Length: 527
Image (cartoon, rainbow, N blue to C red; front, top):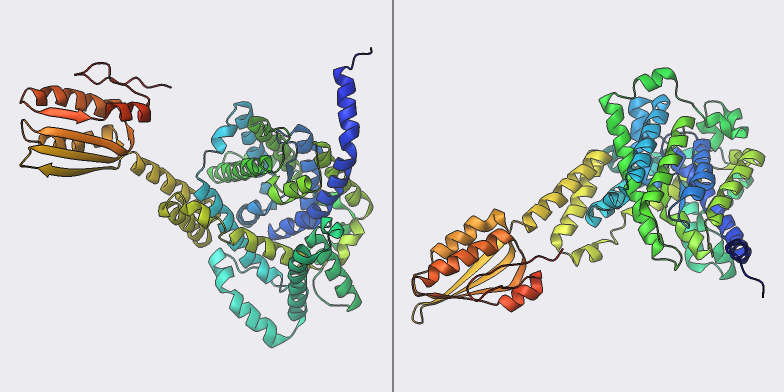
């Protein structure tokens, strides 16, 4: 009987899945095409730069990824930061910043720090995404009117009513752009909700943008199209014109504090968004689980290449990844093939980009921003306390009021303060029965070295000879220092004729500890 080798099994598996992977890759390509360009426009760079990043995300990162079904490319989560970097440092330095960020990610992956990048409070992550959503919605709403964003997040947000009033009062092409934008958003909502079963596989943003192209062409609208965003409109036929290699002069500035901080910001936010997305993708399928260090290193390689070419940074993105899984993708072949289709489109059909209204792509981003900003995370965060919701809301407000990096850092600071408070908060409730000479002490919170003086002071107030009962039902944690205090105090108290009653069995089961003798408490921590 012939033996089946590992290579033949692999070939059979490839043949079994390649059909589903090919179909899924086409769906992902159709989802990625408008998003790559829309994210680029929102970031203040050429739409072709977004396509190049998407190609690298498919062909390179798709091959190396630790999360096989996750799709990488330009992400809405980085648009605000990239726009700020381009405004402050210029397009020439963006490549250096992205290159440094990619090298940081690659090093972190090789040092196996992938799990640490996931150790960020969900309240901060959701707050970051919601804050980014507000900024995207506010800035792209102006672009949807064929106007330029006003500047900061607050200015863009508060400037929306005036921009609308000016649009309706002037009745210019800005009003036509608004109608195209509203048509795009309406079609996204309607197609997502009411598309026929078999046609639902076609992504709503693509249907909306194609319809907007047809309407704008038939009505001959004099609104802005993608070539209007280019310094040289003829570059629309050459996607590679977006490449801008960093120069030696650019590299000389690489060690400037502002550039290094920018690179760290891109690396941190891109890594957090990527690994959060990877965790979500793992919940959507039953295939291989994410190898986080490998995924982080793969993202580093991709962003290093993007930096060398001077295009947009990338992350793992949940929208395209979800489309990949739902369309039946089984292996990394679907992700790689979507990069192939993007490359073929860029090489053969770039002229079609000239027919796409800017307002339509901006509308896709306005809707994306709305979905990111919608507070759907609040009910889940409430299960862990109102403080989590407070951190979430403060993170959003500070991102909008200041900038993305400062807002995230403030959110992280609050989450750390909450952690410190949790490990330093100790409530002691004292119930005394003077007639029976009995004291009940109820401990709640965390009995740690930080709160040892408070516990010691309470014990010192106990009258000599009293019968003391200490309850641990609501205690979350107790460290060795506090246990040692109780043990020593017990011996001293018994010399006065008193007793100490502690539910040691409950304490043992709760904290993996046990009492070694009738008169001395000794805790063995199981690590």
